[in-house]
Image 1 (cartoon, rainbow, N blue to C red):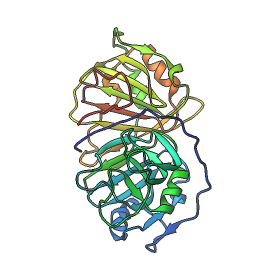
Image 2: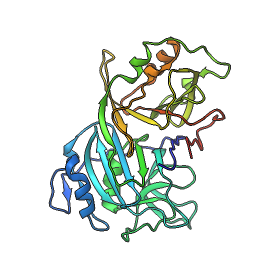
Image 3: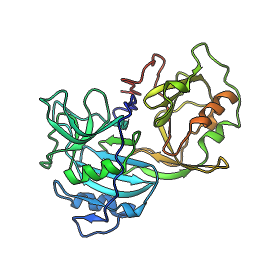
Image 4: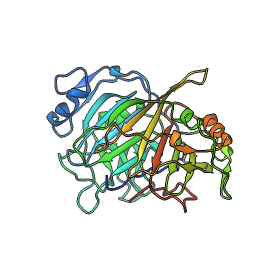
Length: 321
């Protein structure tokens, strides 16, 4: 990927929870599986989509957008539940690649940049104008940077997704591998080092609610805890090995006894035979306890080699370029 981005500064908009419809398909297939996703995606014509929510009725949602093929795949609980055609940014207004978080949702949004153009079922990815929304799909990249979706698909996606949904935008014609992972946070409990630094803090009251992301920079030896788009904690950590690319994990579930089930999302171009969990990061017991106190299903952990030393606000928080 040319850029790895995690942008979070959410204004907590009211969420819409609409009943999901039965399978919608325009290609004759009623179900989706990993073996058929790429083939089914290529068969779609501009404006077409497949929607099969019964494949995985519950769980965290991940969306992968391919700028080369102008297609997107939606996963829930690690299984593909939808495929759609899209229209991304045209030449001179290219949609950035990377990993993004849905920052804001608005059913009847209008553009602040382009003559109040309607952007129905808008799900914001950046504060400088990139979003998912319903729009015209001519069969090629034609927007000013946003990712346009078929109108009905945009409505169903809007009703199914929470704030904080992860959206991967890539140019690789491949799908990420979503595989089970060990308890990413429990692995860190085996260590215990990581002396507190002068810039460390913990203030969960900054954002009492909202999607949670934990970002670790192996270069800066720093960990950030983000909730509701605001940094609520920073900790100095030790790093046992350096990495060359980011690692992404998602918390699928957690039970009352504290057992957590994670998945690793191996991005296009990455292999599954290498891993980088928080077991490779040394932190104090207090830091681990703070992290565990805010974890909820759908939380993400990102371990990145990029430097984040000067980060103080998540309004334009970019990891890598």
